[in-house]
Image (cartoon, rainbow, N blue to C red):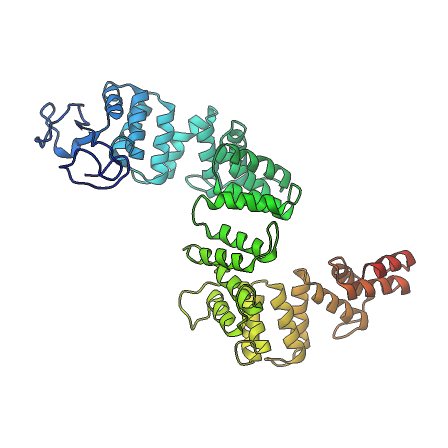
Length: 474
């Protein structure tokens, strides 16, 4: 038989579970509540077959007897026992049956639980619309758990048309009643600006509330991001790491391992340790859900720069190839940074024979996915004819894409093009636009050129104060 407490199987000849010490419990007919002796294959009272005879703990037996007497509270509780496998072997079909009986007898908790059965397809055929029918009236009456699940349905479009505004409305009502799941979801909505205006301070408020009562991996992870980047709260790397380490306790979560590895790699919030970073990257590799193979890319960086391991370009290339999903390998991911890194390796001849054609191939793959560095390098290749035919028009196309994505060097390059009329019509105003964008990111040459424009009055009204300001910044 199977132990109702620890879930492990053991022989019927034992009177207790050899793994956790729990007794088998009383052998009871769940149809009528009659206690059935070990030697009988059917219930002597109602004639039920062996399938309806279960081993039940003493407390669960008392609940069963009350449930059979149409006690709605006991019916819901016995349903929960079957659903969770507490005091009796887990049985979703039996759980759903008891939840339905209790709901029909007016128990709201059972109605909510029955909705869960339909939502997840536990003991009944999965049916989102039936789940919603069980939750909707409860939600209208202000039931926090039902409101939270209705929010999830609107969020995912399950059983209803997706509607982020309605999802947020449900989450707010549930969160204000202290529902931790809803508080976590509401925090996500504010953080990402989904169904509500983006507001990092509100995100932090609700994420903090969510982790006060419950151990939420996702809430701790996102709140850690807020501390790490200073979004909605004062930047604090140490606090971010503390939250991520607490989230790590929830299980082998690759995202947490990578984040912690990055902290040790960069020395943010902890003493820099490339060896410790590698330990976390290796932990992430053991997880099955690292679809982007971020850990493999990070390991490639360690070998490329000789951090925590001896520098080895060839080894770095192997890690990059796997992460980039090189077709010559099997099972790799599609890490855009690794694709760009491979382009650099082929361009410089690091770990592989120099090959501009292959460099362009990898740059293009990453560039077409929006990687600004790859877009800049692809523009450079077209500009000088490395691995492709020289094509100024194509070069400017990729430089512009990179600049639009915030690449300071590309912005500075375009500023020069428009200032000098190189490959485009001379336009001081446009030149100043690009110089300013690069200068505001700290690009020293762009700061000088912008100051020069103010000094000469090219593209802007002459202003010596602005000239001095930008000259001082470089």
